[in-house]
Image (cartoon, rainbow, N blue to C red):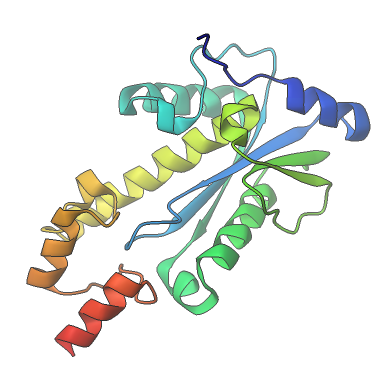
Length: 207
């Protein structure tokens, strides 16, 4: 069975209605117990060939890093970061949508329209459409998924250096057995999402 790769078909469809600058938007880090949620908005230069561009989850870390650098070289990129305090006060969905809006606001040019991975759209000053599994269908959304993933992974590696023992350099804050055992042993940090049930239960145990 032939692998279906993302293309510019969705961007072309949107451009016919709204204009040529179409931003792809995606996020990384909705599920982890620790660290921020990171969103990226990317307006790809369609004349720039990015070989192997795909949904970040289908790429190795090495290929993500390679493509991350190339995307930044030949595209307009904006990044929005929703920190743990916002996640705990507003919930993860609202914070994710907020970070997407921030990513678009950080673009150096305003998009004519936007494509968002998933089934919910942030509030933007341009037409926006949600596409389920958009990171596997749209090259711009795939690029955004890579930028968001690499940016967040690098944040978690830095947090791991300052907070050793939780394995964040490996698990990136997700709820692995290693992470759970570290919480049981070391307790909860300021970088944990206290509103998430496993962290909340650990807090109650230590209080």
